[in-house]
Amino acid sequence: MSIDKLSGKTAIVTGGSRGIGLATARALVTAGAEVILTSRSQEAAEAAAETIGAGAVGFGAHVADEDAARRCIDFALATYGSIDILINNAGTNPAFGRLVDQDKARFAKTFDVNVWAPILWTKLAVEAWMGEHGGAIVNTASIGGFLHEAGLGFYNASKATIVHLTEQLALELGPRVRVNAVAPGVVRTQLARALWEEHEAEVAGATAMARIGEPDDIGAAIVFLVSEAASWVTGTTLVVDGGQLLGDAGRFRPSAVAPADRRSTT
Ligand SMILES: NC(=O)c1ccc[n+]([C@@H]2O[C@H](COP(=O)([O-])OP(=O)(O)OC[C@H]3O[C@@H](n4cnc5c(N)ncnc54)[C@H](OP(=O)(O)O)[C@@H]3O)[C@@H](O)[C@H]2O)c1
Image (cartoon, rainbow, N blue to C red; front, top):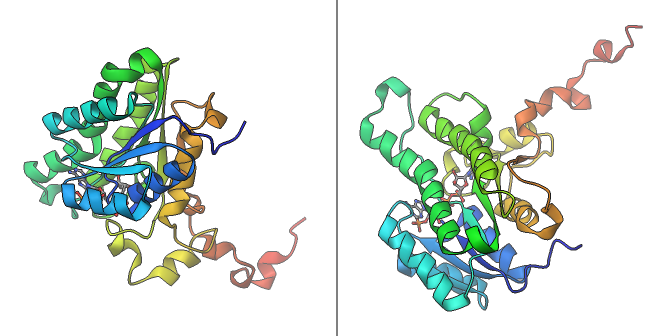
């Protein structure tokens, strides 16, 4: 069984114009799939697909716009005849700050894009194809869904919610459809720029694998989750974070451990 055999499969990747979504679309094409990647902008989606070349097409669709989502699903079926893989990746964080300083509009946008949209696209893909023929779905969560971080209350709650809903969907849609999530740590993308740009060395130093993530790290994990190699994996959230969720690795480096601490106490 190989993890690079997605020939004959059709995949939709929401939020594929850059970052993790674009890297995932490229990885899926490399594994043999035909990929439709989306963006709010038709031009941005097409430009991103062109960077991949054969096997990728761009489709403009705001991820929380039901009519646009239906058009994309219809396009996929009409063009390729199936929708075997859905990557609910588009994400947003318009609400940095304390919860008591937020408003309804920022709450609604965060939860519309990060939580409702994955449910909407899943529903449409299941109705159109996967319910009868099967499929594999991956939602992009975040290690923030397992943490409490200053200023990220809405965003992290939306990611905790999608982890829970991934499990619910796996129960509701099995055995035909597998539903999993990935939980990336800090990855070098536009969305997370504030988390790494001015202190990359510090973040890398606190990470067990001594670097921040690259979009390809997440794309590779997603290809595994939608492949036959993961045929008995559903309802799980695969943490892909270089060890960040484990805590500050800097304290564990040999240089940070004082000689006295290294003595055996037995
Ligand atoms: N980078 C990290 O450290 C990190 C960590 C954990 C989780 N994540 C998650 O990973 C996912 C991808 O984020 P990224 O880091 O790769 O960010 P990114 O580089 O900023 O990409 C975000 C993508 O989402 C699309 N998008 C945003 N709002 C959209 C909407 N309303 N409708 C359709 N597409 C929309 C953007 O397309 P357009 O702007 O062209 O519309 C873009 O393609 C998100 O779910 C994010 O929460 C990221």
